[in-house]
Each structure stands twice: as C-alpha cells, then as structure tokens.
Image (cartoon, rainbow, N blue to C red; front, side):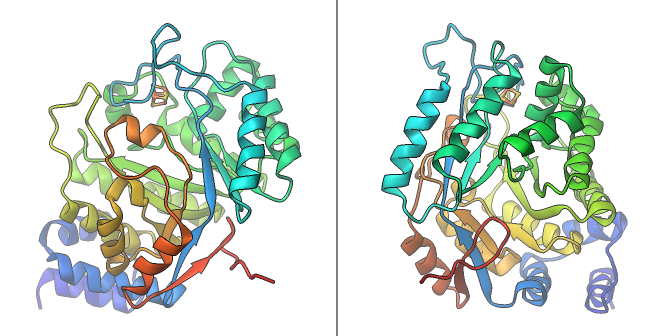
Amino acid sequence: MTEVEAILDGLKRGERLTLEQALVLYKEADLLTLAEAARRKKEEKTGKNVYFNVNRHINLTNICVSECPFCAFSCKEEDKQAYILEVEDVERIVQKTMQSMPDLTEVHMVSALHPKKTFDYYIDVVRAVKKHLPNVHLKAFTPVEIVHFAKIANLSIEEVLTRLHEAGLDSLPGGGAEILDDTIRKEICPDKATTAEWITVMKTAHKLGILTNATMLYGHIETIEQRLQHLFTLRDIQDETGGFQAFVSFPFHPKNTKFEGIRPSTSWENLRMIAMARLILDNFDHIKAFWMMLTMPVAQLSLAFGVDDLDGTVGQERIIHAAGAATKTGTTKEEITRIVAETGYQAVERDTFYQPITKG
Ligand code: SF4
C-alpha cells in the first residue's frame, strides 16, 4: 500500500489528517483521487445538496489607510477612482435593492479602512441597512475592519462587536485572513491586523454568539506548508469555538498589485486546494466556492472536489474585479440552479444560516 493509500484509508475510518499527511496528499495524490475523497466527505455532511443564497454585496469605500502591496482595490482620497458611500447613499442602494431583488436574504458588506470615518459612521450604516431591510441578514466587516474600528474608537474588540451586534450586525464574513502567518503578512499586508488579532476577533465573535466564515488568500508568496498550516489553524479554532459556518478559499489575482509578476494559480491547483480544505477541515460543515474568483465553469467543477456552497447571486462586486477578475459581477438563481443540476446535485436556496428557503 502506498503512503497516499494508507492516508486515504485512515480518512475513510474517520481519522483526522496531520500536517505531515496533508503535505503528502497535496504533493503526491493525483487530482481525481483527491476529488473522490473530498466528494465523499462532502456527501457525508450535506448529501446531494449544493447551497446558494440571494445576496447583494456593498463595498462602502475603497479609500484606505493601509497600502497592502497585494491589494488592487484600495486607493488614496485624491485618486480619481476614490469613492465613499455616505449613509444616505447606502439607504438609497438598499431601497433600490428592495425593489429589484425581492428575494434578497443577505447583504454582504466589506470595505477598505477609511482614514476619516468614525466608528459612529459604521454604526449608522448598520442601522440604515436594518431600518430598510429588517428581515435581511447583515453579514459585514472583516476582522481587519473590526481591529481598525477598535483602534479609531479606542474600544476593545469585544466592545466593538457588541455595539455592532446591538445595532443590527448579524454575522461576520471572515475575510482578511490571507495566510495566518506573520512572516507572510509582513510582506503582503504589513499594516493590517496580525494573525493573533484576526484570531482574537473570530474567537470573540464566536463567544458572543456571532457566527462567521473563514477564508484564505493563497497563491502569492506563501509555501504549500504555510497554506496547509493555515487550514490547521482554522481547524484548531473551530475545535475550540464551533463558530465557523463555512470556509472559502480565494486564489490570488496578481493584476494591478505590487505582485504582478507572480503566475496566478492554475484551475487544477485551485481544485486541489479546495479538495485539501474539505479533507482537513473535518469540523466545518460547508466549503464554499466563490464563483467570481474561480469562474463559473471551475466553480461547477469544484462540486466534484468537495464544495457544497456556491455563495450567492452577489448583485455587484468591486474588490475582486479591481484585481482583474474577468467574471460577471452578479448572476441569477436560475443560472446557479442550472449549473448545479448539470452535475447531478440539487441546488438549495438557503439563508445565511443554511436553512432552506421555503416559498409559500
Ligand atoms: S487589503 Fe484591505 S486594508 Fe489592505 S489596502 Fe486593501 S483595502 Fe486596505
């Protein structure tokens, strides 16, 4: 029996992967073998279901105090592409969205770290969204933004989260994790939340009963071992808190960043990473593919590699597209339902907590 076969046998018996075993699988298992193991795990957890929701992204501003070298989205106030949505702008957007998207169940809001906006502005934005969309779930602010709010308001992480929660925030999206290793963060995002700060925000949110997602941005300067270690760090947090709903990995898009020379990861590498995530994160119920990052055909293929969630219809998105993503900025329920049906799985429209939406 080869080492890969022995590891896969252990997985079938319910054993957990170690970092060393994960490295062997990543480097030596062929892609379809990994796919088969990951798909088996997916079906144990969610059967034939593939989830999606009807959501609308809002990015409040691209003006940022940080100048992360890997970021293609942020700019300075004086740049011609700079924008900021005032509270009235957000109200206008959500009112328009109510009319154009009557099936909307989630607003997803992440932004740059504006140099002048106070914490009160963010509280007002949350209140404005909930005033017009009281029954729509508000998933907003990455741990990086939460750490920024704590600094500008001179509050603890717990106080920031509590105040946002009281104003109407329902959950956190989980971005800004990149690779949870400070040697990497020093190179790609030296001025934003550290590994320890990202983890503290997540553990605090979970303690307060605020569920979150977890993410990874890979394919820049990290090693394969650092990528896999990132997944084991998330698995450890989940063992402790149980507060992560889904994991989503983002392949790095180098265009318009200071890392333009890096070759983007191939679709096969992206599928390999997704399968590895499904196998390592045995305590996560959901592995999500962000179709905008992967392209729709690869997102469809990812359903054979352990993915059970295709995120949402999105509506409009700016951050990924600033980095050169050539995908559409939104899709329809019908398109997601069709691409899922073509794989033999069943599309299930869900709310943010993975409860099926029933009509009637
Ligand atoms: S990654 Fe986030 S914090 Fe860094 S420059 Fe871009 S928007 Fe700002």
